[in-house]
Image (tube, rainbow, N blue to C red):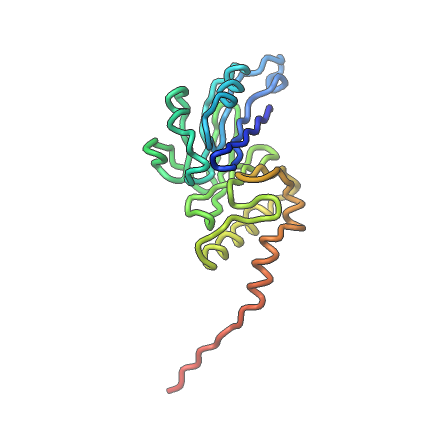
Length: 212
């Protein structure tokens, strides 16, 4: 596979294109298909990469519907007839194919596992493709996604612990913002998770006694 990473200046976020490589078919002739994750923009550099490699764009994966991650969607759909996959059915007036936790998507040659990690947003999803995790804003190098409440933070940490950090082996994490990292590094050193758990331990417990 060939991975293209594009930094989207308007939202300071990462857009990813995952395409087939020369070794993806036994005869060495790649099928020239690609998927795009979180098109925060649709600019000349992204277009040139797709066209230069003669890729057929098969799908658009959205980790969540925050504008910085979907800003380029309308322009993209004017150029390519690629299906959109998201937890929400409508993104910027564009219809999406609904995905749910545990779904396995077969898009061209790509096998994609959907992992729901709500908290930063109700529709946050992580996409697992081989040894890659496209995590959106749920987790990044040393950080976890911001949440609107402590309840949302607890839901997010629980999902990360049970569904992401518990994955066997190591994976490359490709976040919505910031540099790539490894799953093993985040298991050991993620300050956002450690800080949340330290605060949780310090919270007092209350027992309500009812007397008759």
